[in-house]
Amino acid sequence: MDYNFDQIINRRKTESLKFDGAVSRGKPAAVLPLWVADMDFPTPDCVLGALQECVSRGVFGYTEPDTSYFDALAGWFTGRFGYEFDSSWVTLTPGVVYALCTAISAYTQPGDAILIQEPVYHPFRESILRKERRLIVNELRLEDSYVIDFADFEKQIAENDVKLFILCNPHNPVGRVWRADELREMVRICAKYNVLILSDEIHCDFIFPGHTHLCLPALLPQEQSKMILLTAPSKTFNLAGLQISNVFISDPTLRRMFRREVYKSGYSQANQLGIAACRAAYSGGSDWLDALLIYLRDNMLFVDRFLKEHLPTVLFSPPQGTYLAWLDCRKLGLTPDVLDHKLLHEAGLWLSRGDTFGPSGTGFVRINTACPRSFLETCMDRFVAVFG
Image (cartoon, rainbow, N blue to C red; front, side, top):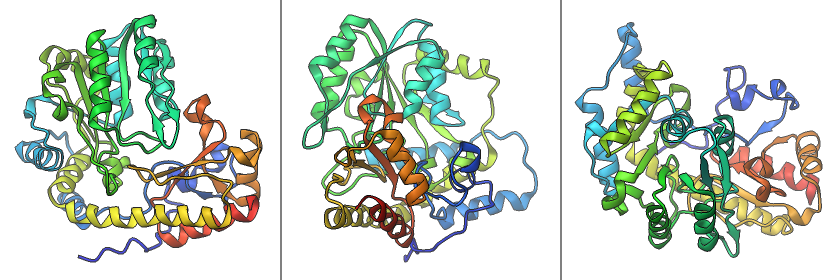
């Protein structure tokens, strides 16, 4: 099938966080947004059809997923990643960040140490600190690409009595897709010190040629009793507003602990439209995603060529996974505040500041390339006009 990812959809005045949230967040009203990880493409027809069927019934009562929902999950995660699971392992939550916060409450106490690998998705840091846990950082090293400092990884765990490790795979924002040897070594060290692993794999479907996403419990099923797998269709099919995610916990004790925290928060049944959309996406969205990946890869290659030709002082290597471009602007010689001010007020661009992902992200910016090419070209023209 042909999919038109070049179509421009006017999202302004639709209560869009991405397009309508500028002024409330202190940004210029007309700024072009490439910040939050929210695609500008319509979700596939199979999802729209499922939602339209729900709306046509006109009743939106409490909803529980049936076997067809779990069959769709199994078809997707077993078919694409070789992950075999029992439906009883799955807990529905309204989002991966909610699940992350719930897991922190379920498995740690105030003052306990939790390890992350910065620069990384900023809600990791924020969730740990808001829950009054101790933040421990194993900083990724930037060589030709980002790599893990395993000596420091083990040192931080051992010296700080770390209870929980939050893995990001594929890694947001640096775009690494962790290899089998890297995943095995992290799991080996965590097992040695009895550290529980939360594996955030929300970007698992955005993998570019030459790389393979390895679902952690599928790679090491003998160790999965000490793993919590966090997933959602929200990034893949642009369903964030429908608030649906799936948490896989094989160990019954850990599963009971997690669900107890979910119930304590007052959450029970999932969003009816979210359930319908997730089932439809995982049942019929494969061809759409395959076409989207080609388009996103071409967007990344466009950014790479454009910067090399017009602004080679800004360094960029296309990511192995995710649709997020991580640009190294340190050679521009600007402080993060000055860089952000020039982007907002001279280029008219709203990008994600690198230092929001941790101190090691200082001097970088993150760009969401999941948008029509013409929009991306306009934004890159503005970028170069100011900094070129």
